[in-house]
Amino acid sequence: QPGRLRGRRMSQRRQGEVSVRASETSRVLSVQSHVVHGYVGNKSAVFPLQLLGFEVDSVNTVHFSNHTGYPSFKGTVMTGEELRSTMEGLEANGLVDHTHLLTGYIGSESVLAAVVEVLGAIRQKNPRAVYVCDPVLGDHGRIYTKPELVEVYRQVVVPLANVLTPNQFELELLTGREAKTDEDILRCVEDLHRRGPETVVVTSIDDAQGEHSEGSEIRILASTTRPQDDGLPSRFTLSVPKLGSHFTGSGDLTAALLLAWTTETPARLREAVLRTVSSVYEVLRDTAENGEGNERAFMKTPELRLVQNQDAIRSPRLRFSDSVRPL
Image (tube, rainbow, N blue to C red; front, side, top):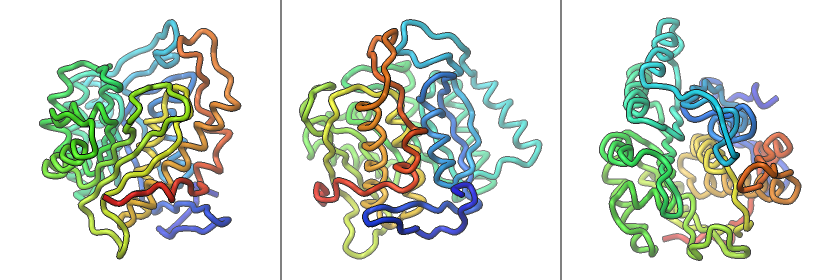
């Protein structure tokens, strides 16, 4: 049973398939959005991490009826004080024993400031705790959070993160640099490394610059300052086919799986990224082909089919190895 896996060994399945085995002490605090219906934020992150053997404590920065692509949504937004109060309850009962912090969408400066305090409390108990930060700020040239949060991420959050997963536009926001060419992107990544994160995965580089362009490719660029096993690149790109549709929650799923696989293979970033991308691609491909879109949502795209793709999450059949290009 996935929740009972022990050890930190990689389990071999059918040819081309692998599965992760999380340590029995691996416990993630996941701080991001939540929806009652659908799969974004914690709804995209918690279930996959649990499938891979991680214990997950979740804090919901928003609690909405559905994602904001629908004509309307209702719910509540957490404040920084509410997050602090929640953590005080955990601390009072000796429950702050996390090995990882994962953050996604943060909607206000007060909550982001509280997240920094949460990380401090976690690292006070466990100085080696890993912070995986998905800096959800915008995409395709459009900021969809409060603009003042960008500077807080730049100055405060980025230096604290171990793993950072921006998209191409977020990479520009976090560095204040243009990131159009590979040379641009590498300069941005090097800047982030100097400021703190040892691993940076730029999760989508859209050379075609077309959000829905059928048949084009999206590239991923990954870089780490951690020593890698002999012969394995510390910096590389890989390409995946673009499915010609818009998906909500795919970035949240990607960050969660990168947390899992970089924990399993810290000296093999190439493998961690390939496994993550292989799982995400299979989920998105099946969602595009078999999901039922909601006609009331303005994008009319289906919610991610996570439940139907548990095997692809647990034991991804590796794809796209031939597209890996060391840099």
